[in-house]
Image 1 (tube, protein in one colour):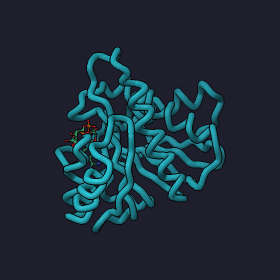
Image 2 (cartoon, protein in one colour):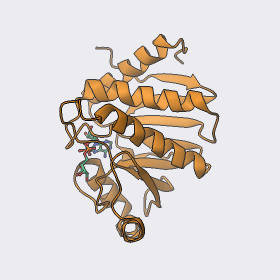
Image 3 (cartoon, protein in one colour):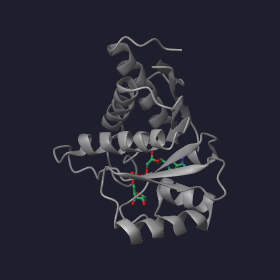
Length: 194
Ligand code: AR6
């Protein structure tokens, strides 16, 4: 498996993979792999709330009081407390139940609703973690194809304020899997690698 950062350009938007910690990213928004309660949790959710401080949870509580729990595949935006990014977009990926329960569609929706929210807020850059592949058990090889496909489809459909999309993958295996999925998806549709 080739293990290298990959970058493609779609409609003037750069899409790339890096290995790293999403709480350190300087994109305008970072995406949180949350759960429907929006009350925090483990994994990347816990890391974002710890690094950002209590302001994020306060805003999440107000959203839940106003709109109720966040359904799987939907997204909401809050400020980011002490993080370098200005906003946190919270989305809920599907729990893996074998792949026949709408998981790919729900995972696609989580990525695309997050991008839509970023575009509606006129944001220029956004970082995603590998949604659903930790506690929620989505196999990384399947998730990487769905994630790269979902983002590329969104970016090809319309030109928005978003000029940079980054997949920030925590561990080497996930990073390598997303990098090769991005190269494969790009090759299939004839996009040039940077
Ligand atoms: N930066 C980037 N990626 C990270 C970081 C980080 N700081 N920390 C972990 N990851 P998970 P899920 C990776 O479990 O599967 C929570 O409790 C991690 O290695 O965070 O969508 C929520 O509250 C993995 O590759 O999210 C929900 O209840 C990826 O992020 C539930 O977990 C996703 O793993 C959501 O589960």
